[in-house]
Image 1 (cartoon, rainbow, N blue to C red):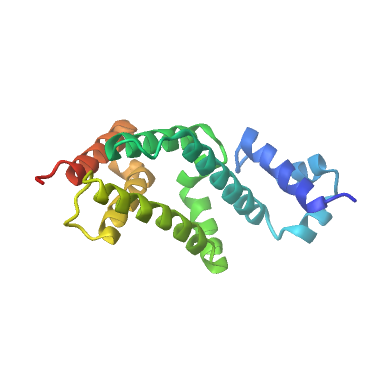
Image 2: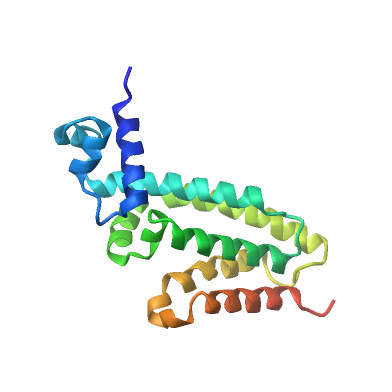
Length: 194
């Protein structure tokens, strides 16, 4: 039995990855999937809806690959710097993930995603991993223990917002500013009097 929805998803992913969101259209996706355009709309209400599903999967896969390649026993500065660096490289080299910076598209996707409750599940998974790591670092004396764990998580969560607003900050300063801010945050959390 042919799984048309999987064919559409895989075709969409391939086209979004090679051409980007803007330069991919529904008729190309349908043609690659071996279906008619009308059949596409039986499974997805829009190109944006398909892209959201592709984006979520791509983002999850990227995060898994990244976490498989890092050593959680590294010191906090090394670990977080590696994560930020790898994430920035992947986000800027992958046309699907690069759409995170497309304000018009992302705002539509974000609204849809919130409506579906999608951010909550991903955020909860991410938060539990961060919380465990922070507890470990505190127990090992590698990170400040005078700050509440939730505050430290909020500080870490602020780092991607710097990248999201790079055009307002000044694109000419990237990626260096992202690395400096990450370094300053981590040094502030790790360079303390015991």
